[in-house]
Image (cartoon, rainbow, N blue to C red; front, side, top):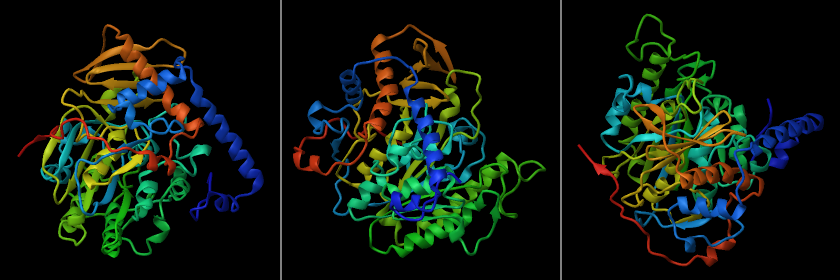
Length: 464
């Protein structure tokens, strides 16, 4: 176990670990943080910030704090007397290849059914290939780097921006529910240090239907979630759930699904079971007292397997995502989008007016000619995709440019400005992490000036 977390104070948490071990672990962490300076290229600091801001699609007047260069005011698309509650369901390893409407296998009928009732993202891409990358993007909106996720890096263990820290300041109860050991990948330590009030994991499930190698089953997680959401009553809440059943060795309870093939413990059957548990939860949720006051996000953390036979195999970063709730109009967002776009889009739907440093787009308020963009980290290589144009940076090598067509990267003529934008994207999170420029800031709130939200809100193709 690399760290210990049992409260919201990172200093107190370290008291449970020996000083010798703490020193050794700190040195180990510094070694990984040094990986942040992989040589993608050089760019003046001011140009990095200018290009990152330009890519956010906001006027320069929106940025009011030079100490937090991307900190800006977000005016939500929806005005509500009371902002909605938020539930994020992070589905383990649910790639697009298992979702029929995304070109995959017909293994998720419940998710397909739910997609008819909410805002479905048909071209959304994960930021990485591990769970911590998905958590990093969906909970904090932070871009990926070649180093370990910020969940495990030293300078981000407290005071780092997250949806939980923002919503907690607005009176929300915040909790994370996981069926396994939340110390894994330092999830518990990072969450308790950055806005989450409670972490519920496998040791808190005294009764359960099934327990496997990675923890209690998805239906146990959802049963506990349902009880927790009911217990909040009229108090606002943000709850994040992370499922475990769709993970090797693919263990789940008997008698729930019709098996594919003769062997039970396969990826296809685990996907079918995870889908069953998800549908079962929403059948109850839609009849619960919290339904009308809550918006739900269902999104995968990453694809279950990503082959290493390319600079960045973009096809295998494609994942499903769905925003659903009582007043969410059914529709499809069919432009390129990223996990990083989901947090600001959720705040816009919830009706939360706020200031934050996230550079993802509110997808409900982008301009009509916005092609969409995504950032993907694959080992030490980073891809920046705008529409079908892709720039890939590899350490100590010139950037290369491609068109992403029919699931493949095809070399194309280089566009210098796009390459510079991609380089800024690769460098910015390194700067923001080291300079601690990804956080909330109380002082800048008083300096905000009202502005009219730009762009048309009607960017979703309504259907069905």
